[in-house]
Image 1: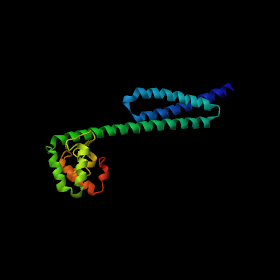
Image 2: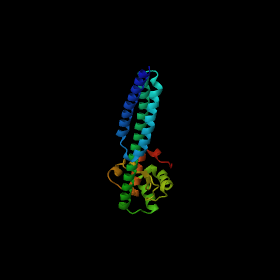
Image 3: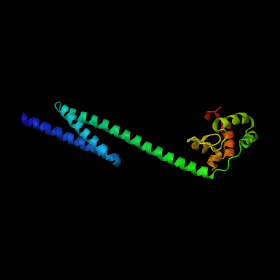
Image 4: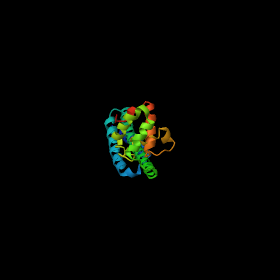
Length: 202
């Protein structure tokens, strides 16, 4: 009987060793060198968990050992995959923010001189037609008539986000987001396209 128990224990440890190798391969594929110390700590916890699962299930036979180990390994693999996706998304967002700020800096350096508030208001009445009264009110609400207004996300006379500005004809053609007159024309265009609701100010 002791010999059979020793054989069962040996098989149990062999199965646990195979599980450990598979889990270690999953961790290695994540390949986040800067978190190596954290991964080594997780590996120790995973090893202990696998051994514990194998020993607990050993009395019920090989099938239960494999089922418990597979379920545990699948759960850990899913957690690692989710962490990797979150980390990648954070890196992409940070890179996009750096590019956005660099583009905004270049745009600001190339921006035309801002005109007096009265010039912008007069220009709105020249080009906006029936939208003019509302546009003047929105302009003062959004930027106080300052074509260089910048809250860190939105910029210019009508406070465009860069992605929205690039969706307009003049923005897509290369007009500066800091060009107050271009923003006036493109706000008229936006409103004519039914996009007036995109402004918080009414």
